[in-house]
Length: 166
Ligand code: ZN
Image 1 (cartoon, rainbow, N blue to C red):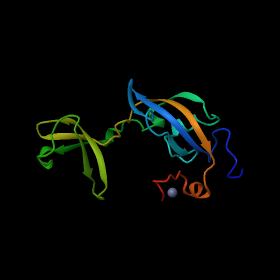
Image 2: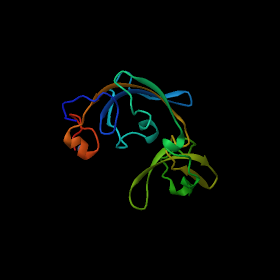
Image 3: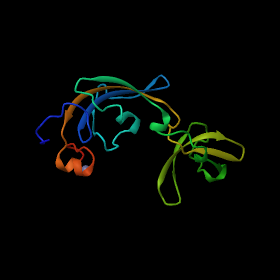
Image 4: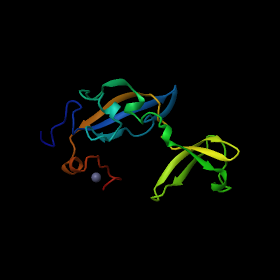
């Protein structure tokens, strides 16, 4: 297929432009409404696998409702990602309340995100699971554009836009 030829349907190595609304537990968490569609390269894990696999064969203008189970989205809740930390290790600026989100540097100096899930007399429990772990995701999607990737996009495995070149 030459680069000029326009793909007719979603296959691997096609750049998909997609509008979507993400609903979790009945709440809209994310939507491209009033914004730009999401562009990504199909078949390169640019988006979550459970959504990507439902897009094959769709054409421009097609809509679809896609339900993605937790295991194919952000994973099941990992009980080992819960950690008890002594209250004394928290700086006074951090409110020790359930639901507080914070950033923690691990031993390698990597920043990790955690949520306070329990506040005890001595310890505070931190949850390092992704906030959407264990959740089923519901996407309403619409394919609004298909094109072939540039040679560079294909070799990088992702889409380049004017403000995102690397
Ligand atoms: Zn790149």
